[in-house]
Length: 210
Image 1 (cartoon, rainbow, N blue to C red):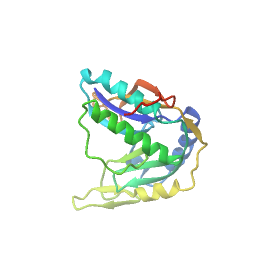
Image 2: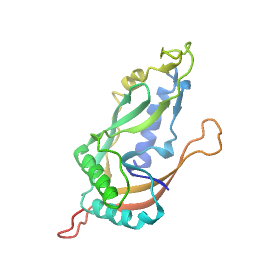
Image 3: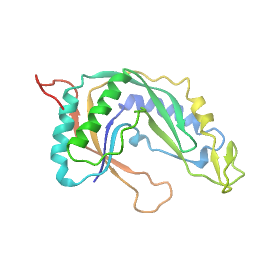
């Protein structure tokens, strides 16, 4: 199964961000982007890819341990950015050091459970809002590459998110999520996400380590 560990924003935070994203969708070139569904919004902590079913019990145990070692912390959705011309995202503010620590512990838990993980990269907290899908040279607000395709200028969208500052909430759990990729071939179909395990933060037992 295809898995990742994540922090899921509460419904109130999602609704606030959704209103801001609705305004973004009125900008030039918005129809050329693949917008993510609200029910899939999350801050990825550790992406694991395909995980053998037999690893799930130990993976769950180690993620629960990592969660217990991390106290609940405050977070809010704040601002935005983009990865080149590939993806537009909303950022995070608040106790982001705790978020990075939880991401580090989640990745370590997966590796120790036997999940092959990508080489460690500097953690960038982000919630993906849209992805570029290229297009033709006449797209407004875009740029043309050597193959004659045009990507929407995502900097325009990121700038529009600069002032967004959501209501803080307390992160109280780490969630192991299963991702089911689209299989129907229907244009615009979104992945489906299912919470497999919810791991409460805090309440570490004395002497417990990763």
